[in-house]
Image (cartoon, rainbow, N blue to C red; front, side, top):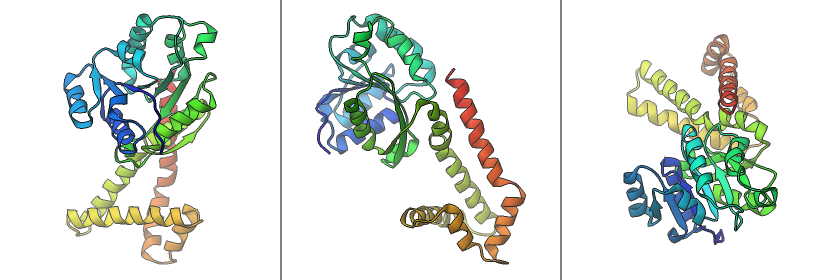
Length: 283
């Protein structure tokens, strides 16, 4: 990857922000001197400084002002106060173009525009493209996948810069913003479903006489191998499942229990419930 040659500021220094910072530096997209972080927790700022050599501040407005790209990485309930503080502290009109990326779950673009665009005329709003992103926690080990959606002021260059940043943490897909609630439910919450399955498989092994370590190792390698098999073959999950399910065999006995208890329907209902909750949080 070539360098972005942009200063990047992180509003928030939590685990996901740290994953971004580490990935940007390891991928050589940015030098530590080009990265700034802000947070109200000074201990987090010290960790970021000592671990990555980046600059830090407790002044969100100052960080916003000096960054070419601003990434909002705070909890959803903190966004209103943070954005209000930035809006009240910034000069209007906007002097230079700035890209604003939000990874705050459930916060729609219109809510961000409500604050950041309030003091700006239309010509200046075009200098402040906003892109909403839904990453997931495997980004912490550079194996994430992110869904992104841009507002009307984002040019092709802004979208490309965002994809390069997200690409340092894994894969990225572009969506209409109306699809991001489903993205949140499927991939944002998805690791929890996988961990739930892992928990259950380990418990099943233990219940049938295996020790915890053996059950965990068998489960993890089975899931890892199954994912790799599907990635390397042009077959659907259903096709691959059927190949393992011999008539009258052990797998068929297990699948009959899963079908009888409507596990697939339950998982679909769970993802639908998560989508609905994301929609409620976005209002």
